Length: 516
View (tube, one colour):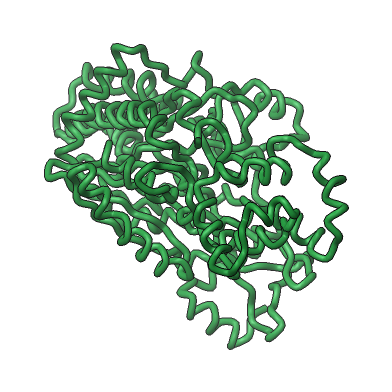
């Protein structure tokens, strides 16, 4: 299947040829659907805390976290192109059209319409930058709006003629308006980090995953603003970056599952999706790591609930971790009494939602100890979950794997067999969804880092149909970062309020009250 030059290309990307062969097998056979057992709800596995419990956990986090190495991990390598899908389509449809046709197009005055965008354009945090950019080119943006020169305005917003927003990462777009200077979304993460990530010396560690073509712009943008926030919050930022490794790219195939080739005959590889970032996370050798998407930020006046619930899930993770470490030390002791074993079983089942198999009770004593040790000696994540209000995205479920083990997992809709009435009904009964609000414990009870690659479910990938140069192809994504890439972690679900989830998927989302 592969020529000498193909094999060299694969080696140059530092990919094992056997991995490529496995990927092609995946294309041929497909990935199995997840088997849902039931939706995770507050009745069975989503934890909800009362005000007193929340306050206690926040205090616990504040006391314990300064003695640990806390890190904020923000995936932000993608371009913002999808945010501007409607505007780009408008430019494409009307760039050579008389303005008289705008009136018909603008009959749609709904929130996500192009009409609504222009009607509220002055409310965007980037408006002043756009106005100044156009002014330098000899245009008055307000006059352009009055004379319906919408295409011209969008060219200065979206292309390299002006701000080039459709080609920048979301991190570098102006999101929010402030009196002392409007902020990019990446700035809001600096502000957040100062609130719940400082160590005892007031150092704040933040790691951004970026695309190679944007890394220089990232560094320049953050170096421009970080001094401002260091003074504002009396902290010092320790910021670093990584890119998705070429070795995590996946091969593309045509619709006959043969390797897809570029015009020059070389193999086509595609980024492996955000699941590839488990490699970046693994390389960090982190301790306590918060993970949150780049676009889920709000202005300062709405940040209080975010801080409160970040510290809550952080405090709960630290409290669970303390117990887990204590039990692991007991299990490692040559003498473990029956009372300890029963206590550990109860904790695993009722606090960590770990299923103990029926066969466990038939095991010899030393095998029971090994079994419990292996169940507890894993990375742990506490995941915030919000009540489902129709937002797209994955959700929390109890699932059964190919070995018959039941565990808590975050599952995407695309992983579910919607042609199976039973599975579809379980999905229908789900009450919460995943806002990507995680805190992770990446070290074991001896202080050593887990090798996170040992806890990935390789059968939890995705296949999608894409195209290049007019030709259809199949693309393969690695198991998602918070789906299959963390499948064998200890997983805990905690209910958090919807106010902590404010993503910006399209540009008009910035006109929502929570972003104004």
